[in-house]
Image 1 (cartoon, rainbow, N blue to C red):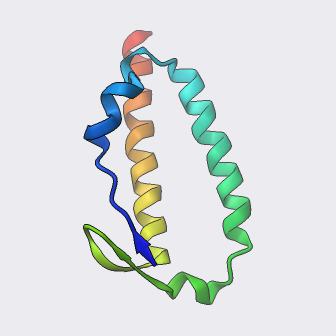
Image 2 (cartoon, rainbow, N blue to C red):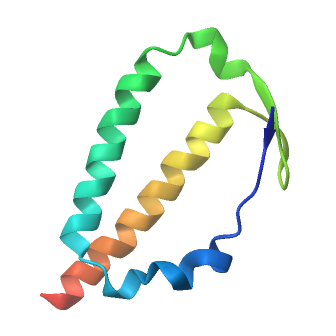
Length: 88
């Protein structure tokens, strides 16, 4: 399938990240992570090798997409934790 790229810089200003509650954001990440873990446990191992075509990155497997998603979430959590620490 086609996996469409979405430019985060195009919609980030409307999301007002700097005005959102860090604790609520971390709780949201935890809830989404728990929900997705349950869904992904049901995905057969052989499905991780299925290919899609990302509109920016090209051919990629489901496993590669998931690895990138995990990295992306960890990237955001790092910034949330830094901001929370700076706020005391």
